Amino acid sequence: MIISKFSNFIHQYLFLGEASFYPTQYGCKNCGYMGRLHRHGYYYRNVITVFGTYKIKVLRVKCPSCKKTHALLPHFLVPYFQYSFYTILFLLFLKFVLGSSYSEILSQVKKFNSLCALNTASLSRFHKRFISKFNEIKAFFAYSTDIYPEADFNNFGILIKYIISFERRNISFNTSYFSSMPSYFFSP
Image (cartoon, rainbow, N blue to C red; front, top):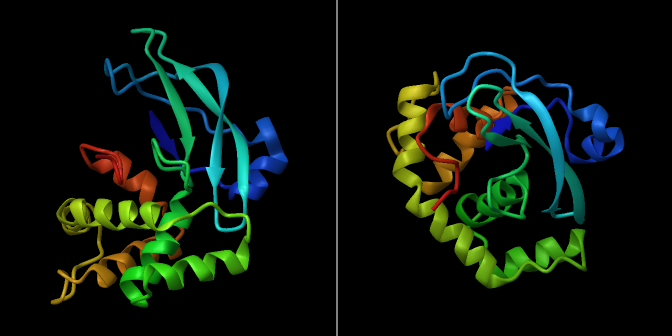
């Protein structure tokens, strides 16, 4: 799997369709091939946001050297999660920065999308996964960015704010994390 920065958010991505797939991918992480990876088809994937559920096409590319295929995920997706990166970040912001309870978060989300199937079990899973990845995310900021931790870097809310500040600089946290760290953001 390769996470790539697309210039489009999910609505633009859906509107443009295959025109969204302009980024040419170079380099195979499997064999070290440095050339261009070739398009190898698509598959569909569900994406859940605060505003709705969408079905998007995900491009697959193939290495001409080792024949390994890779999914080219847009930066707003998290591998193996149906919820988008920005939705998960929003839910974590409500929990760790604003201190909202699960029931308060669910009522906030229902204001945007009354059909959203988000439940306390999903919120708890996001919460626990973020806590389990906490030290790895801190290491990413300490060693791979020019954002320097504050004194209270052990606070979950501050780490969420760092991720948001990274995104505000028009740098995809998800893509940068994928490029720098040994595992995907939010991977088990």
